[in-house]
Amino acid sequence: EKRDKERSKGKTLTQDIEMIVAKTETVEETATEKVPKNVSETATAQKDISMVVHYDLSALIPFASPLATEEFTLELMQVVRKASRKRHCRRGVKEVVKALKKGHKGLVVIAGDISPIDIITHIPILCEDFNVPYIYIPSRADLGFACATKRPTSVVMIVPDLKDEEAFDYKEHYMDCYEKAKELTF
Image 1: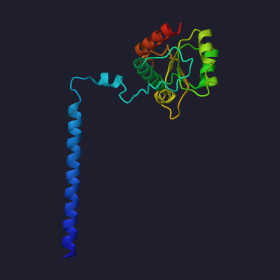
Image 2 (image 1 turned 90 degrees about the vertical axis):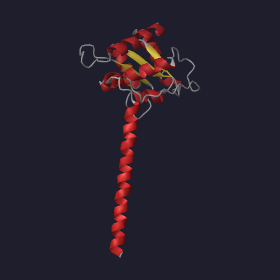
Image 3 (image 1 turned 120 degrees about the vertical axis):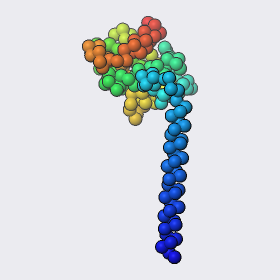
Image 4 (image 1 turned 60 degrees about the horizontal axis):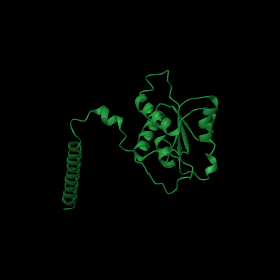
């Protein structure tokens, strides 16, 4: 009798597992059906759906000008993410200042919610001295996330390798952001 009970318990467990597996398969099928069939893989690969912009201006420093709009902030974060994947980013105040003094050209993205503000007050002045466009975005946490780091980042400089065309596959997006930032800065 005990063996019969154990066998029946085993059968019900396997039936339960089969039901759960069947349910997950149907959920996966319905999830893939919701994606439009005509969207190409390159179009979905170009957009980082996981990017979320926290456009909170309550902690913004008083001299954060030029400040990117919410849409432009998303574009900048996507370019920063692509550049960080190609190792074209300088992260942090120390690295950015060093790159500026060495004469590297690129785009500087500064977080606008830094405290104490004395940490980044000299960076816009250096950028103007070396004719490098800069732009503020509201959140350092978003900037750190875009750089693929776990820590919030106060400033990032995108320094693309112009000689290596294969590694600079994000050139169009970068040039759009560069020109917009240049218009706002100078």
